[in-house]
Image (cartoon, rainbow over all chains, first blue to last red; front, side, top):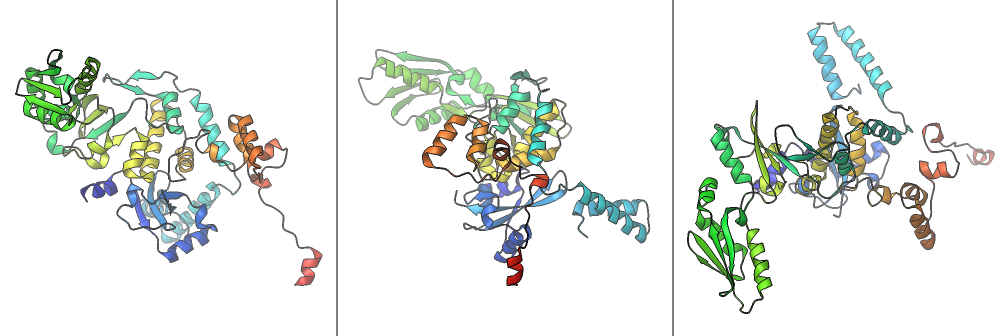
Length: 80
Length: 375
């Protein structure tokens, strides 16, 4: 448990949020793509330890960007 | 209002600072938005090529030396072009692994305290604390005489060393006291060469510290002490009580990826690449680095820009053949009857066709007379 906490808190690791099915469809519609075209994240990724995910879920990543402050990035969970 | 949050905040901040009216503020916001929209990249822009050129030209000015002494420290660091190649080729281990550990304030009050922690972090092997390790041929055993002075200096108890040997070498009989430890293989009739091998193995027994960290150097700055380590072991560093866990940095990207995940690795690559370029006095816009890194981390694994990495995974046969080892790719593709849809740039350049970039990107859709009749 202790270690999981540190992983989420490290400066290199941005916040990972699992999107609901509705939010997922909204994102896919916005970019006019299918979920296969999204960048991927493996289901055993250490950053996902705290969240329950299944294959096909879309994870929103809130990055701190040097150019626009905060940016949102999406990755789809794949089998690692 | 489609202005990104940070621009919106800036407009708010400055309009408060210069006390402008609401009407003026709206006008400012409108103009900022106009500029912002103009600055956006249009669809079909060849950003990959722009990135390649932006990297290509300044990298001719990077130093080609592999090693360099980093200021006051005696530790070697790979800098310049070799390091940049290492990062973007996604080599499994950096040639000079390095780690930065920032100490918590309460552990960095005195220099003695810091030195003690530094010694605790540095890897100590049995060979370092032993005065001598000898083979007794007649009795077929190995005698380890401990260096008491060294042990006191490093603040290690002989008992701790003894326990460590017992846990590390399970197939051996371990006897001895404070001054010397005798280890004896359990099975009899061992060849001398095997006992010699055992002796070499015993020297490498890890007694204390982080495995792989060969040098440590405490550095003081305005915010306290940082310990620079030659060698990297993120997993064990995270267990250290004295260290600020949130800011541990290593230049081993794969280690970051293993422990913090792909997004952590992405951020680490950006920082590493930016640092290399900055140290050499070269400024490349961070957007280029970000694009490159996003491509490298797209699959959830780190893929280098090599023929085994992202370039080798291109869909088009011709595009792969253009990069490296063309004959191999073409022969393999023809053997299995691979199909090339000519969706990208290089293959179309080779076939002397318009490339899908800029004005070459959109296709033309026209209604024929038949279709109109159907409606």
